[in-house]
Length: 273
View (cartoon, rainbow, N blue to C red):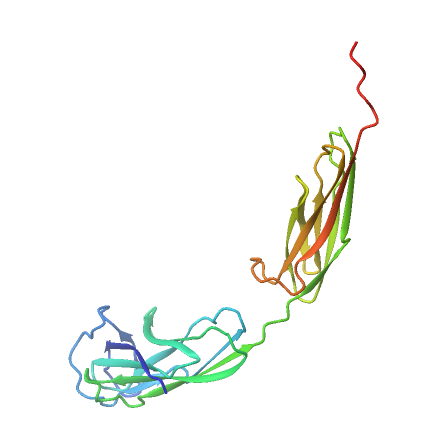
């Protein structure tokens, strides 16, 4: 078992009164104990708020948030206590002693969820009455059992586009562009997010005008007509499994072919007088 000492702190504990009373832990903020010296574990007993922690995550996603187990001491004993936290290795990535909002805790983090399955590990907490760490409190050491379940990532969605070709037409000299046309994108399975990129025809645009779990509409617009002739281009539609558009789904990209025919005007300008 790989043991890593992640936190060794001296704490001042208000141990007074009758046995069975649980006392708050405090620290002077310097990492060293305040108050009188220790004199053995006495009747003090270490207690944990939980003996196990369970984590879960989806493969390829973010590691789950850290979890804490509260520490307390009951009974009578020394003023100063010294804590050692030992990490038993994967799936635990770190374990450290912290005081959060006045509550002493062992805070446990696990590794990123890379492999599907359930793994287990341990974190061991030792509390001593002396700085040499030879006089262990009653109930110490305590073990925190860690269970980490990594579930398979959901299968990414797939998508189809229709139509797969678009044709625009205009007459040379028109001051208006031809009417825009829509490409319908249909999604199967989990949500897919889209990016549309036009190419090949100067001034061609493609805009994702709506997007839902069921699909999207991509509006394609041609520019105002220029010189007569037919030009070809395309719109590339990429699908992603995440809203940040970083994880492309299988079958992406899909291409819509675009043609734009500009016809010469049949009207000639009248000769000058």
